[in-house]
Length: 538
Image (cartoon, rainbow, N blue to C red; front, side, top):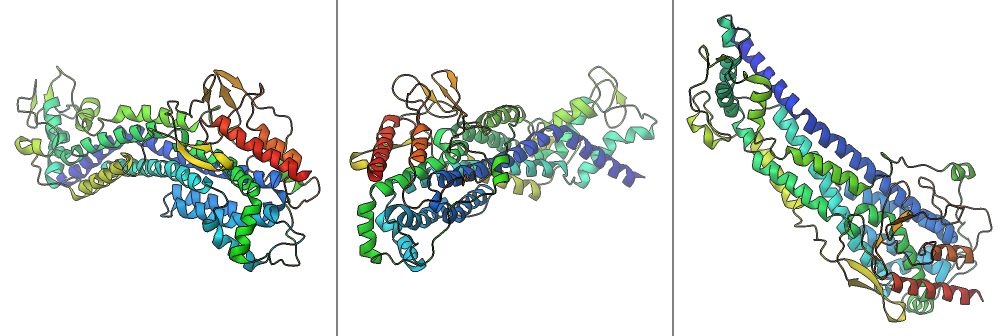
């Protein structure tokens, strides 16, 4: 009978533990799943934007570029969700593969494609020739700075769930089991089935049983504090949403820069790989199922037009309420579930009395040396292991591998159309950066429609009349109504690219993750690019 009561006592305390942590566990697990789903949606949407860029503006190379685009964003997803791969490596691989396509279709177009051997030579020479300027380096920087915090954030949430699962299924010692039996079921032997333990008695027993769990408290506090600090740093070019949804703009800049410097690049390629060697076949252009193009895919709004930053902020505000959860867990169990209310007769372990007269010890292992109810012997290796994991994730969250957002890398156009990586300005807005010139320009990134932008305190919605640049997330958006062309992009596509950087009032608006305060300079580069294409058309 005593053994059965011991089992019942352990089950009771575990049930109370699981009930007390259920809200916290649900908060973390629900948001971990929501953030993972959001990241998956962002990655897919960014892939669609990039595919659409090729299909609408560089249609003749879209089919060849499709595999590289898909591979890049597959690697992005693998990295964010924990695979040990290098962002620098997969970004470099993307631009290595892109250069032969740009050379074949824009720099040195022909009736037929270059051979596979010649294409491989060009691919290998990309890093020496540097046809895209500093843009690959900027993309690597942005990817690293934005993907790593998001990856760490997800890892931390999953660890939080593991901590709670561990403490929910704690294995109690024999001394604890006996103390729980005495506290909860010994009154039954005296027919005192309705008596509850005195508050001080309950605290001594439960604090003794949860002495090892209380050791988690400082590390749990540090864990939530570090999550909060990391969340505060994730904005602007450190925000995965901002970086991924603007990636296709940097790709467009890279292709445009290579085309402008085409003559020089062609000479460099000839020196390294010799004159172009072509095959008798021609690569087909972009194609898409008509019905799929019309249907598209609508991204769910996720509770309206909520941004990733606002969801993260809401979660951190809720999680902050549980900072002292493990430090006050024993007290919470006694006050809410186990102990008798103040002023009522209570069980003290031997009889029903008015109050408990023994000394009440504090929380933690050191405080249990004077515990009159439970003897605590040593530490729990399972708890020690979870503490070590918390220490490790705190180191990651504290930014030892995450840069501080004190200054931002921006694209600055220098002489000759060369793009340099500059550092300028602080960013004090959670969703983006303030612009230069007259008034503030704030990026409001919504997963439902990232082309909506708030300018100088008013909402400006981009015109929704059909344009070749408009994107239907979830499809390739390749409009193949028209003739497949080789060589340069058509005039309509070029004007569409230019239109993205203008508001309805004609003012310049920067939508690139690396261009927060270099708007005027970037427009200069864009106009030069457009002028060069128009002249080449003449």
